[in-house]
Amino acid sequence: MGWCTSPPSVADLPNHIDKSTMAAPPQLYEYIDQHQSEFIDRLAKAVAIPSVSGDATYRKHVFEMAEFVVQELEALGVKTRKVDLGKHMLDGQEIELPPAILGWIGDDKKKKTVQLYAHYDVQPALLSDGWDHEPFKLTHDEKTGRLYGRGSSDDKGPLLGWINVLEAHVKLGLELPVNLKFCFEGMEESGSEGLDDLIKAEVGPGKFFDGVDCVCISDNYWLNDRTPCLTYGLRGISYYKVTVTGPARDLHSGVFGNTVHEPMTDLILLLSKLVKPSGEILIPGLSELVAPLTDEEKARYDVLDYSIADIEHSAGAPVALSSDKSTVLMGRMRYPSLSLHGIEGAFSAPGAKTVIPAKVSGKFSIRLVPNMTPENVDRVVLKYLNDEFGRLGTKNKLELENLHGGKPWVADPNHWNYVAARKATEAVYQKTPDYTREGGSIPVTLTFAEALGVNVLLLPMGRGDDGAHSTNEKLDKGNYINGTKLLGTYLWEIAAISK
Image (cartoon, rainbow, N blue to C red):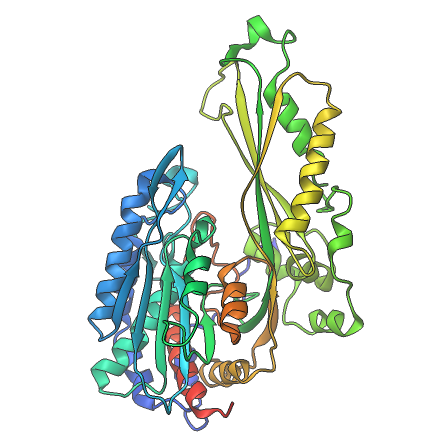
């Protein structure tokens, strides 16, 4: 059961910061160390707001979280503007989209301007899902140093890390080394609806993003829980909903079983034709869309500080698809994956209800890599599902929807933005970071890169075992505090480096 053993902690790293080589002033670190409790209290207040963007019943709380963020920023001298992104359909009703929060502080033409991005919405979470603690109450495990709560790592902790950095500068009377612009959204977990259009509309002379030199996003994680990383690539996503309808209403299986075509049977058969237990995607033509692997790229995966034990520790069980490290890494970073997520309309409560559902919807997603796009993947996937459904010989009806999508992204890891982040990481953690491509999707990353025409960096705060999107999501106290130092040091390294 070695996979249950936690690797060494980095919680004590603040005591080992090499102050002789860092660009940031020592008093910045001292302030952060002295105000750890206040920073944790700030995170607790944010986690207590259940800002779930994918459920209409929680929409008021997403707006509440937006107000919380604005108040925190404005209290530290940031000028803000909440941008109305319009309305959208959710759960059968038209409702207001949460606002995008644009903020800015500093306008010194001699300084670089760094654009920061984070999101204030979270994934759904219920205690009944299997949480050990109330998901929307931050629980500090003093023994392990872990801070449990929905959004603690994804992405409220990193968002508040920037606010902590701001507070330290303001309270210490330290002038910020760069100009800062903020773009915080409340729909990242639901496709970032409306944000792309806003970004594109605010590009140009005199507009909000004018003058931005680089972008920093903190919305991803280390590969493991011992080695920090810088991320220069992300997979994209295409998220599908497959609906099968038949009878006019739910039926009794004792009366109608083996008498009518059952939607659930059709749906299960259809979903079974998408992916093998080995992870192999069964959709013809999809693998032909993937950029070929080069020897140079393959070598990058071989040297990363990662092991099969890491993936199994993060997963909480010995379930890795392969015993080869590079194979597992490429499966996460540079090859597509297809995951089945759930079924709507099916009986799932305790007990033994003998119902034949009249309508069921299966949900699955495909993580995209270069040279895949949502458009060319759609053509292949939708044709395959329609063809396979036609082979079932059923009288039920099929409806296919792409709920949201985003293209993959890859940046230049040798850019000065990454060099500054490397130096900051080495100063705070005394380790050279791994350079990784992440398996998750942050669609706005590509939008920033293409619309602004500048380098985009992913600078993670959390660890690989944080459990974002899962039960018992956590952020280690060490990562929260050191991560705040890292974000602050990054700004000073950006100021010091030559373009």
